[in-house]
Length: 482
Image (cartoon, rainbow, N blue to C red; front, side):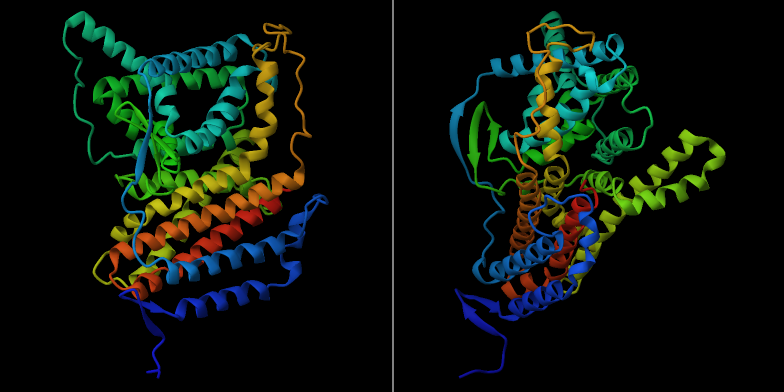
């Protein structure tokens, strides 16, 4: 006998049938879009396996079905504590070796920038910065854990200096003052925006000598900050790359703790993210800058940018171009932040006890897998192909025709992976990343709200946000397809 309610008991918690209704409605909405809506995104990409609009439908359906399944099958929080198992010890010698390697790479990058060819593609320095450091370490952080903590040349130099000082003085060197709590990760967020500006906006971004001077300047800032505020506090909070790669490393299955390597349950470390002032800005900067990287290569920006440039035409060609692209970069970061806040506003319809800012912090960790999904979607093929250039570059790092290791004749094999495989990997990354975000959001909601129905209702708008981010990612992929 029924009482007309849309709920039924299940394992002591109340389960709502409503998610299936919402899922069906969203799926129907996705299927209602005409096939021509995104067809223009396939210009020049005749080798794509199937039309991008079909991927859009499929991705939306996967997300809404995942959401409905989570509401029924996942009724207790499972990711709020880290579950780990010890694997093997890791000697401190590894710290020394990797730290020394990081310092060597830093010195080599600067030297090549000054002494090598001005052709960026033939100079080791720019390739280290843009390919192996910025993109390669992002992938390595998710695969192996916080490897940048060991490789960081700035942390390694500071630790070596501290060790020498301790040996000379017979006591450890102390920081001049405590790191300000209010400052949090704001310097790191500003640093990520600055690097994105360098990569995507600055007209001289590929001039090796200019990059070398920027590396020197950043190095001096990092060493000064560590000397004043302490090595660990500064490297985790103020070093843009230490903070960014540290965020991504929460997705890894492995972590180092107390001299041992541990394997941990997938996604269980992500909810442990400590939200400091500026942490959310760091997430928005990372996601928004990647979004602009894709958007700036699309047809809409190609038609919009000249109009923005004309507004600054009185400042000169280079300045007008940089200002126009700066507007686009900041605009994408603000759009990402606003879209996330939209999902938080939906949670407020269920939770009247917490403020919007508190809820935004509670669910901020759900953006981490999306950040990496965008990294994979936009940079996977770049890393696969440009990464092969290391064989040539280590033999001819200055681009002057040397052949140190006998590999200067190595070329890039563009057939190592086909365009269809690349496309599938990019789309799979977007879908898996956003499903992971849904899982993390649902699990946090279950931890906050005792009733499954309330936890599920609180995530309706977050589902819309995840579908929106997925659609945006697919659109960006199609817009830059060539």
